[in-house]
Length: 338
Image: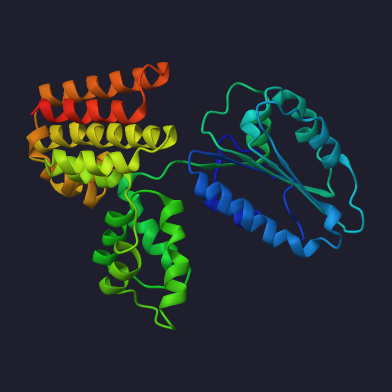
């Protein structure tokens, strides 16, 4: 195999999943957890046919206290009864002594197929990544941009036997938000409900998603964009039940207002919607919300909003206030600025 100087895209990984000539290592990393998990599972399904014994598949789930010794021992060990064995190393980002893996990368066990997941785009400075990259074992899954979500949704449903119009694709995005796991979680509903039909209608989406959906960060953003302070608080109080919800909400708000600031500059320059979406990686539905949120089309107000978001983040990390109180103060400040 020719040496590579760049990471391969995770979309290419299945091209290299040849049962007769598999790669010895598939290192899947990046920000898109859904794609990493999905491709890891697909690789395992493909290579399952090579395994005669259940003992020839081992899974290691790393955490901050894990070491590589047992996993490397397993990788070097010969299969029990199969020609190949499959070893899965999950959450490799938790391993501190990554350079211990270098010798294995340079001379991998040819009877082992190693599938590694690393849920982070920051690989650090370990020497292993230059070696993985040169050998073509490194597959990157970048975070999907907002403007790319409609195409992903359309293709995801198409791959699973369903067809969507552009309007219905955008409706799913509006209802569910930019979360691949949540979008994928609705697929079984359509598989059970459609009864052989392949064209998903608006009525199907309303029945299966709109009527059953729970609140998300995107509902809070919708209420803020509409200038509805009361609704923002009601939805937020139902949403922010734990620290994870609050972190996700802060991230979504930061993303929305960052995109608002970006789009506002282009709107001032009278750029077309297509230019704004293309350059800024902003989806049609997101741009629609940004345009609706005219109360934030002001540089001073946006600066104040970013200050409020930063202050909420600091208070959250220092644990000086519980999450619901933080959220209430944040929404109050956001609406007091306009």
